[in-house]
Length: 194
Image 1 (cartoon, rainbow, N blue to C red):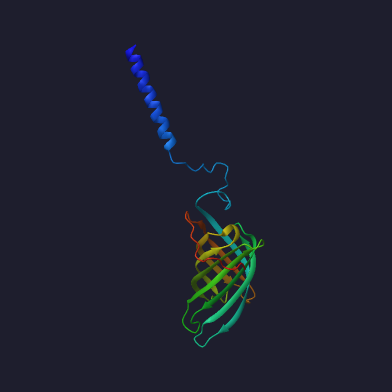
Image 2: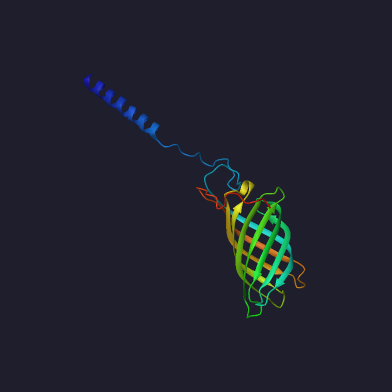
């Protein structure tokens, strides 16, 4: 009988310790389960999601300075991941167009959804004329500010565009990843919505 009581006491102590440790366990996040991993409004601490955007834009040469730097603006419409039908706006500089090709190009870009949510960023790359197009360009882009459901997100990736032979339109493509860091710290207090 003494052994039974001893074993029962050990069992009681073991059960008590197990409950104690279980109660001290740090709360775990629930698994994604039914949460759509491609829905940016899904509750989660961080996300990395493929991002694609395709626009047809209309170029406008703003000016060319004495060094051959071409300033160009483009406005257009198209489709972007999670934004749906969107507008696109870009202002860029193509440097030293009076020098040998390829030329360096930098600029700013803004995507705005029909709901008014936006992504704002910049790009840099190379551009040059070809026998089929006055300008063909490719490079890298980074969106650094978002509004609405894109607040706290960045987008990193590559872009390319081809200007139509008659320079009447531009096909612009962006491919990258939409990223929400685990601990979001805004780059700017608040930027105006475009």
